[in-house]
Length: 109
Image (cartoon, rainbow, N blue to C red):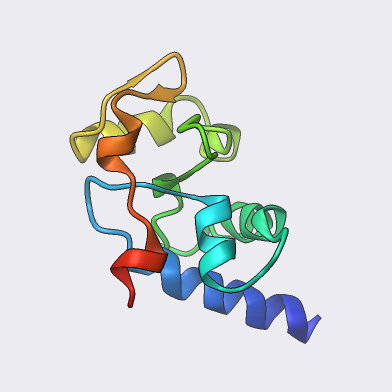
């Protein structure tokens, strides 16, 4: 249990750093933390974070910019949060994904 808690805490530290108007991916966070194949673990952490007000889980998407975690927000809440930050979404896909992508491996040197 403590391994998951520690991993989740590390993931949350990275997610807190994602700037407003930017997004990253489950895999980018896992790679930054040295969690080979850990994208799924990042997803679990995001799913568990919805009661934590200081975790902007809406800024974490899949590697193609698709809002795969939107069901955990209820309705269109994930898209609404991204739109409020200037990120346009169409059919659950972030438009101009590359221009919004934030890579922790580059940004958190």
